[in-house]
Image 1 (spheres, rainbow, N blue to C red):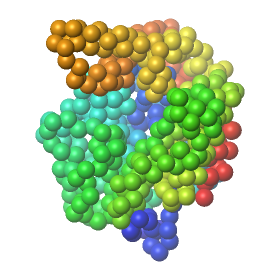
Image 2: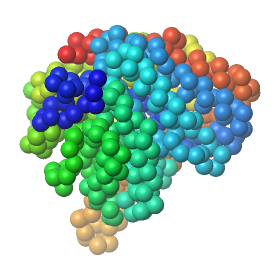
Image 3: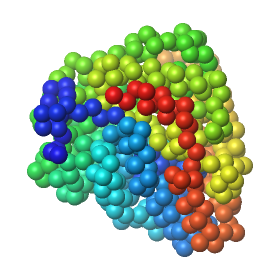
Length: 466
């Protein structure tokens, strides 16, 4: 086995063409509320847990999570169903010394474990910096606790990001099971250093190490804008897009009208061709790093609406394969919404958090699963309408980007602020537990043997693994 190379639009292992097709391991080294059960940002969740329950219980709970959320049996299962790649989202805080007493665990140790299991079961690893220093975007999934992307305006944060990739390269430059490095998940630049310049600095640091791994570059505006990225003066470069569409998110018949627009396989293909058009014009591989469904049914049941979403997902994968795309579906394991491996409603973890999770759903504080509707998100519309009304009345001006304001409030600021506010209600469910009991509860939550599998979703994925 040799380090994979980008050869034209293909990825090759020596003279053999490789198609990377698999799943994301979200929720392990970078936690998200809809996956793991909390609300708001991971750092604020951890801080509340530590402050309210103490260090012993904090360490017991989060260490058990790291040991059990992904283990060898998970890799064994993924290989069994035909997947040959995992994208591993990493929070930079798992790779550096903790702050304010927070311990994120030894991320390098767990990446080492994933690499060893990957070697054993023939599953490539794509390392993904999902949460970078200073936040590369304004979203919850970059562990952003303020909805402001600070990376681009800070040389300190940029230097730290470059050094993290240097450290990863130092450790994994000779690991052929590592398919490549996804340098920044869904970057969203502000005024400051350009995306291109940051990418060039990271790649230069990696190549100076003698590291020839593929680097996957996502476009600006969370993967939609590749301006300035067409002339990267380094070899072994590939590009990555994400492909989330209404047919896999919203209830409704498929084929049929979703959001007022008739959607069938032909429309999905049209949307996909549009998404990858820029990359198709380059002589580089294209990798769909994320796409997936949002399911509303209780585990293990599936409603007719959720089955329609899975049918749309299967069509999307068939289209990706038609265009020889590499892909990893989002995500492998979670509470119940996007993963095909879910916690059991009978687990102590699920029982303890049942009311809290229902509260989160009613308030719509998880943007990914609320899909920007209902709960506190609805208040954003009222705020935007009030601003527009006053500006229009006082200035007769209607030129402002009110849709952008709604997104900033409804997708980010309001859900994040309210989500972080709710953390004490989460921890209260475990206030009477000892450290030992908390470790047992966390270990029993996401362990493969104790989880349930959405077989219909797995069938859709297996059918199209080629």
